[in-house]
Image 1 (cartoon, rainbow over the protein chains, first blue to last red):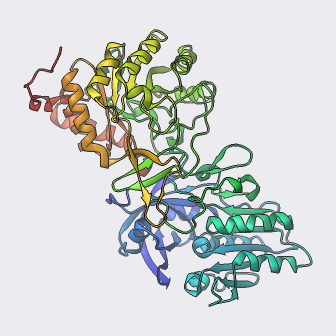
Image 2 (image 1 turned 120 degrees about the horizontal axis):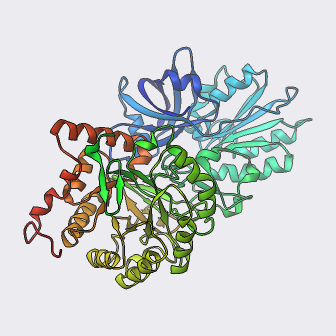
Image 3 (image 1 turned 120 degrees about the vertical axis):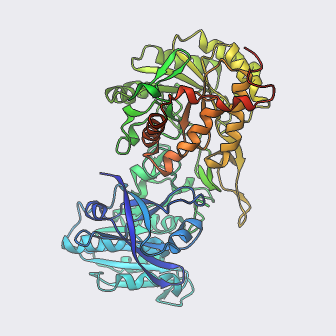
Length: 279
Length: 315
């Protein structure tokens, strides 16, 4: 059940400048969260940011009672987390949202995970769940440059299949968008991936949606929208949809099938990508 | 609930003076994991229209210093779904429900109020004449005293329920709007709705909200709202007021009561802290118990500092 968990910051690990993880002690949350779910995190006693921020749960250890988040500093909310002192408290409202589904996967074919930049955030826990359930998964991790692939270290030893890196400037891995790298690899396979799980900025999703549609691979996108509350009260985080005007990202998502999203209706402000949308 | 917190708003009697503001509390049911809704003085629902309404294209919200801008555009399930699904669930939980109502035209308002007239378990109607985020209706009714008077009079003749009118802080003269609503039959006034504001991304020079402008709420507007409650309470001392605007803690509640509000509505704070409303009930209860005070005794204590002394401008 969702609740407001009082949590203590145990440690911070910096992967590259502005890319870091924070691990909190929050035993109830650690034992109740599913891959792809998120929390609304509050750094207490602040008027800026006033609202909480949504963070995907990156990993959870029910035995140790710990939850981890991957963070990229992009604005006042993330900056507050970057400067939170170890041992200090924060409030974690969650678990929220629907989470990834592992139902209907074919064990004879691998799964693909496609992540752009901070879109790596929800996937350590998903890789853990996929491995535990006997599925093999490949990781496609992309970013503008090598520094944006800092989180690749976080996946060392937990990716059951292959890892492919791509950077826009070619400074690490293949040159070009990770969606293009994924498309080439997927097209070269004798049998398709059984499913694609993806997370990244809206432009990455907009590029990936037609790719998975052409390949007829079922996909689950972990969408990003500015959230005021995280539990369906403010209706601030809606995304233009195909079957009705909008989906409410926080309660009907954040994991959405690409065919549910009206990609043509995304405004420039919605597709601007990795910026803290709540300033 | 102790009797010390019992709150009278004209014909309406509430358990306590802590309510939740329309648009910040969904239909109440979103909060059942965090709040025992029956402990609240009441909840004001998301604004209801005759038919379901999709609302504005996103981005709909952005954060500002000590607050937020929203241009949700009154997305709601419509009055029929509210009556079939939401209200029975709320009634079963023992919640005091105030239905917030809006429309594009006077006829729309009257039709929604008419649909609600048959329902059981509604404590009052709150007319939203102050939404800044729709092209028609909404704030247009609240920004002209003549339009306010006409609409309130028509709704007044369509319902026997307690009628709350939620005023716009964007009105040219809020006291005149309040007087118009009162004279046309409002039992209670709630103030204030959000202030029209704007935020621009300097990197793109593009407004952060797709609607362009939005309604500002949160602690940033509290002093403005306190001043407006104080002024209206001074001018119209016989009209009960629900104060709204940036209320986050007990001291904010006490401040609005002192200004002249008989009750308060907690708004944006519900997003950041979904349990805040029930906690404020407990804190106000403890405050009154400690001092042997009643909530009613805390109302209007600052009015003696108004220009002209202790008496209001009119009786």
